[in-house]
Amino acid sequence: MNKQMSKKADELMSKFKNSELCKTSKCLQDRWQQKINAWGKEIAKTKISATDLSVFGFIIGMMAVNFLAMNMYFEALVCILVNRVCDMLDGAVARTKGVTEFGKFIDATLDFIFYGGVIFGFGLADESNTQAACFLLFAFMASATAMLTYGIIDQKSADTKASPFYLGGLAQGFETLTAFVILCIMPFAFMPIAILLGCWCLIKALIIISRAYYKLNIAKKSK
Picture 1: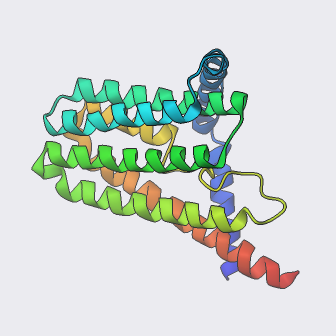
Picture 2: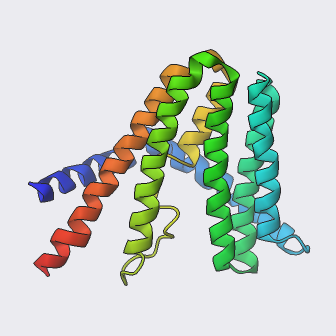
């Protein structure tokens, strides 16, 4: 039964990845990534390190929390976008200058704090957002915890190449940035969008838990 559930979860994930929406999204991301890589190589020629970009982007990104609390959504959106650009650039610089263990740690840590901070900011913006913000934070924590824990344990396997911090998260990256942009443009729609994104996060957590149970328990026993 558990094996069948794991296979169904993988099938659903596969269908999503092969959908036209996902393919279009990936195409746009690839084009943007090419530009980021080019900029990263230029920045790498200077004394600016990947960690410098991570910290700078984090400081700017956290300013969005204050702007959201004051209902200054345009300013918050600018801070969010600057944070995300810096997050892409630090990776490009790291790949050019060399990836470090501390760099991976600080990048992932600041990213997750930033995501939680923006959700907190929307909760401060309007009292009516409080319950939806709490639900989204709960769902985001569930997804992040499952992803990070599984990634760290599974990284010990010889066939694992992915970073333990990024396993194609549904609760991070392009999808979350898109939601934040829409929310800054249409803050009145926070509740339904937060609930949808929260459910998306919980689906991600369930998929990872199912996959982990099969790969780390059933598959190993069968060997």
